[in-house]
Amino acid sequence: MINTSVFHNKKAVYYTLGCKLNFSETSTFGQLLAGLGVVEASKGERADICLINTCSVTDVADHKCRQAINRMVREHPGAFVVVTGCYAQLQPEHVSGIKGVDLVLGANEKADLVSFLSEAWTAKESARERVASTGSMADGAEPDALHICHTVKTKEIKSFAPSCSRGNRTRYFLKVQDGCDYYCTYCTIPFARGNSRNPSIASLVRQAQQAAAEGGKEIVLTGVNIGDFGKTTGEKFVDLVRALDGVEGIQRYRISSMEPDLLSDELIEYCASSRAFMPHFHIPLQSGSDEVLRLMHRRYDSSLFADKIRRIKQLMPDAFIGVDVMVGCRGETEECFDHCYELLRGLDVSQLHVFPYSERPGTAALRIPYVVDEPEKKRRARLLLELSEEKRVAFYERHIGTEQVVLFEKASKGRAMHGFTANYVRVELAPSDAKEELDNCLVRVRLGNFNRDRSALKVQLL
Image (cartoon, rainbow, N blue to C red):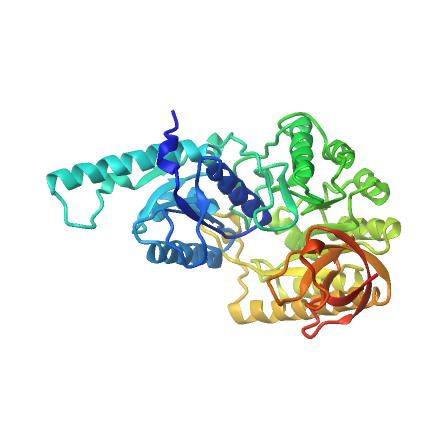
């Protein structure tokens, strides 16, 4: 039984680290608590509840999580602090031992966040009353029993927490899948998220319809390995795409990330002719060296990846293609890196997301003998980032002078509005032309030259 009275007139702050999936989940947590009377605290205002949704993809991410938790505890003294997400699942004892943390929820438990929070909050208040009545502890001290941790082992992670929300953004993020069965040698995500699982197509269509009813124009499909959709329900991802394409009111969909071996020609062909799926793909390569891909236990080779890029460009010449690349992983000799660099230089991709390899405890990659030192990792990352910027700028330049439709996002007062074309060219509208009524509107514009930092193209309203 949820004690809803504990939430009435409470104020909360939310902090998200990591991926778009985490952002979507945090937004949903906020919606659930708002329905129980919790309001989001204003900037600088002290909160009653702090919720931190964590990431653990690298050791840097772990460090950022610890920093965020400690900062929340420091900035909101006396608040009830909840930590969930991948870092909470992988290191629950460490997280629960951080001073000020009240409740730790793993991947299986976050689906019942409100119930766990209600129970823990009630227990904390009762304990505080007992301490106050007996005077058995110093002022400001908290009984050890108040630090509650709920997690299960990876194999027992079965729940699916639905999420379709936008928070304070324009685009909605629809969670269509969770977990991963791939167990790549460098990755801890399957241990943090559990095995692949998904809801039904029918339930996801209903969520998209609700987003449309709320005025949503664009939805990003998120998940851990969304191309694996269907493990739970026996359905196919391409059938989900077809069903969502028919939802009235939603004018744009984007697929957040798709493994190359799961990006079928059937899906590419459908997106090329669909009503609302944009010519925008994000495809993780990780390495362009077949030797390194084998060491990673990836399920494709560089030839298959290149074929997918060519197929997309054949059907959608103006498609934006983002690519994830990892540098400096164990086994990546200089020759292997050169193969990766040359492959990417020769492919018509639009932008690279470059990640230096981070050793994760318990992963199979630690058994690979060849180790790349940190200076060399930085050198390789710099080379790929420079290549990425060359490709992004060239992609943008091809669109200067063209007319495009942009979905604008709300801007702070006196600042430029930003938005994206169908094929993900970032644009900037001068503050003098920015109007509040343009927020969440699809508007035809003419693309001009680059803005000052070359992060976007300036546009003129038509």
